[in-house]
Image 1 (tube, rainbow, N blue to C red):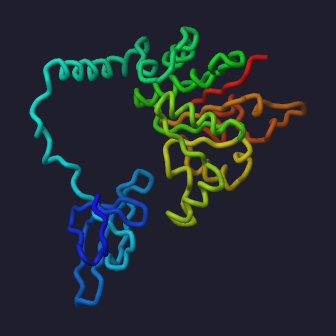
Image 2: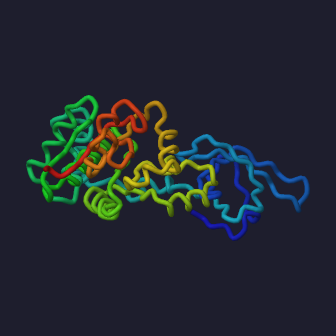
Image 3: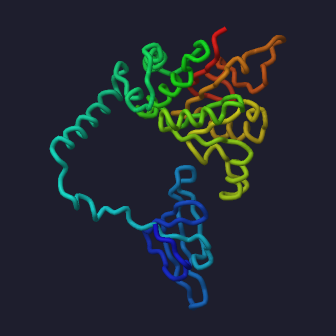
Length: 292
């Protein structure tokens, strides 16, 4: 990436990829100014996943963060020669393994891509999940037996098999940081904490009307925030009638179970049974709780 001292010093061309207003854009047209003092107009199309195809016209000269993204180095491809046959064979076997395991529910990928020691009993939820046409499990192991690991294995496996694209993990606020650290360190999964600070940052970077759920593919959110319409309403809009490839992991699921009197424990409406077919979530679910 080349940082420009001033966007006026170098104009983008049609087909260039540029970075403007915290997003990546493809240049469709550049309208030259009629006089030297005027700014050229760049007609852009967004290349980011959450706003793909959105158009934007900017006065290039006045964009403070205008950057032109350079090529990705394709000209250096194979500049160092061919791989050693042993290394290439290992790469080829990896591709074959990925292709086989993506269709065979009896072969797993996630345990071999996780930085953990997996106990045999922790593989059972993963085995059951892959045999279900739609993942819907209730994991109720005793405290300390690794429900986080079991849920992480399922999430990682579904991502590797392209069966899941977006993941929401709902937990008590006291363990949000713990979940974030474990998912990243053990499974290489980066999650965003969706809280007031994140919502404020997204509104500042992308406009007040942005839906925060559309700005990333993996979120951690506390149970309490799901009561707030400021978070629940955009979530419903994001999911729509049905969002393919979505997965909900609900930690401490007893918080969402019906309490006495028929009311939900924290009134989040995230009851596992309701998550199948009614609002707000229509996604495969993996509720977790400690065994009684």
